Each structure stands twice: as structure tokens, then as C-alpha cells.
Amino acid sequence: MSKSIGNIESYLMGENIESYLKRLDIFMDINEVVEEKKAKYMLSIGGASLYGVAEKRAGSSNKKHLKPQVNEVAKRFKCRLVYQKEMSMSEFIIELKAAPQSCEFGEFLQSALRDQLVAGVNDIDLRKKLLTESRLTFDQACNIAQTWDAARRQNEEMYTCRAENEIAASSIQHRECQGTSVNERSYA
Image 1 (tube, one colour):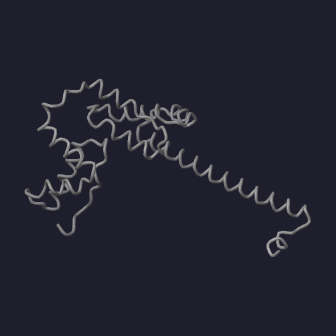
Image 2 (cartoon, rainbow, N blue to C red):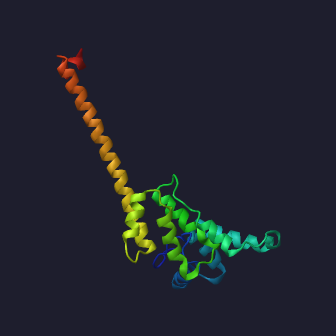
Image 3 (cartoon, rainbow, N blue to C red):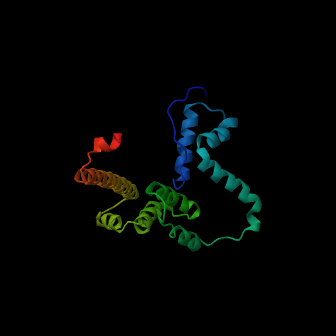
């Protein structure tokens, strides 16, 4: 397969695996990948996340009898323990998407992710903003949270630059008040 028709992105943890595999199968059919190579293409195109899932599933069938079965309620409880803490917003969203891989939320997955994103953000003002949105989806919540985080960082940068400029201006004024100009001091 030298030139492929169309493209497909790598699998992202939290994404519906069945839907991804159907799209991947269509991609391989269009590009006429022979049956013997489909598994290898799937693992290479799917990226590290899909490879990790496949590796865990393949390995778990051999070790299944060694591991006790974890209750669905316990799995979902662990998913609800994902909070932003010291992570950037992007890292938090990735962590959030990765958490429910074995929780079997089904159709409820997007709502569960949205709820945990709102509950798990550090910024109280961002949480208030998210709570004011009616019919908020997970994608909308991610967009608002990432925009909010970028604006916060940009504001901090602007404030820092302004403070540094004010300190520099104050220092220059202080020197001029002492009777020495900036030019005289720099060459003295």
C-alpha cells in the first residue's frame, strides 16, 4: 500500500472502539489491503493506544484465571476519581478519555465524560461557566475548558510582561531621579 486513499487518525483512548474498527475496516477495504496483512495494518495505523488495548486483550485471555473479576460499580467509581490536580487542561482531557476504557458506559459514555470534566476541573470559575451552559456536550465542555485555559495562560503572560515593564520603567525613573541618566550609567 504505497499511496492510500483517504486517511484515518490513530485511535484515541475513550473513543468508541467498535466505531473506530468499522472505519478502519472501510479504510483497509478501499485501499485493498489483503486479509493476511489487515491485523498488522490495524496495529500500525491505530497507534500506541490501540496497540496497548490489543496487547492487553490478547494477554488477558491467557491470564484471566489469575485475576479476580472487578465489579462494574468499582470500575466506574475509579473513573469518577479523575481530577485535574496539577495537569494542564489537555492532559486532564486525555486522562479523562483514557479512564473509562473498561467501564462499559455504552451510550452513557459522553455524558459521564462531560460530568467528570465539569466536576474535575481545578478552576472554580471555569466550573461555574460550564454549569451555566444548557445542554452541554462533552465536546463543547472540552472546547470551553481548553479555550478558558488558553485565555488564563495568555492573561498571566500579559500580566507578567506588564509587571516586568512597570518594574523596568520604575527603575529608569529612579535612576533619573538620582541625577544619572540611563545612558550615562551604561557607559560609566
